[in-house]
Amino acid sequence: MFTRTVTVRLHHTDAYGIIFFANQFKLCHDVFQDWLEEQGLPLPVTRTAVEALAVVIRAESDYAAPIQLGDRLTIAYGVEKIGSTSFVNAFTLTNQAGVLVGKVRTVHVMTDPVTSAKRPLPPAWRTALTGSLVPGL
Image (tube, rainbow, N blue to C red; front, top):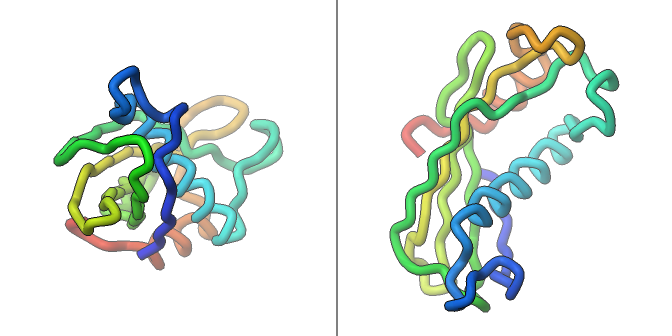
């Protein structure tokens, strides 16, 4: 399981000091980007710099407890499912007291960077994703 710990900052919150809902996705996407870099699969600067793009086609976010300014969140990342052209990322967010505060799932489809057509997962991606497979996360 790949994890990162972040502190909820003022720019993450709304007027009541509670995390703005879209920022839960942003925090998880940052963790995914860190994981990609660690796997040797950094996001490209331009579309044409890679053989395939992982495009988010579905995103779900569940909230289990309030996330407030100053909270220290541990975000755990794993791959829930791998298909021939797609994969499902799963994240759990736990606060400094060990309380589960949220879950995020994103479904990605591999696409051709020129035509945007679906394409099979590249071997390097399949290997990295398989190494992080945690069914039922």
